[in-house]
Length: 88
View (cartoon, rainbow, N blue to C red):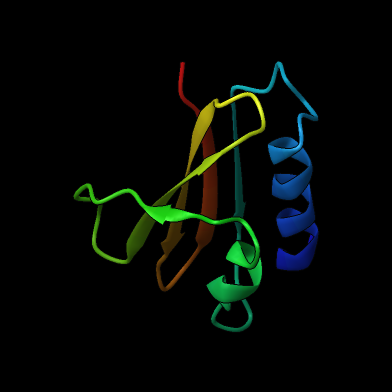
């Protein structure tokens, strides 16, 4: 799954798709350094302004129903991961 595919998935969630989704995580071994701008393009993601692990970034997005979700991006030497968590 590409970062463009994930970007589209998040945009669909913001429009109301997958209303029962609470959490998902994707891990992979990157061949190149991920370009996070591709993933975040058009999401109006705000920096979560919370302390996270070194090499990690956390952003908040909101869907059409006002429900917020955090996207945590973690890039280490061995693996890269994206964790999506919906706030209640």
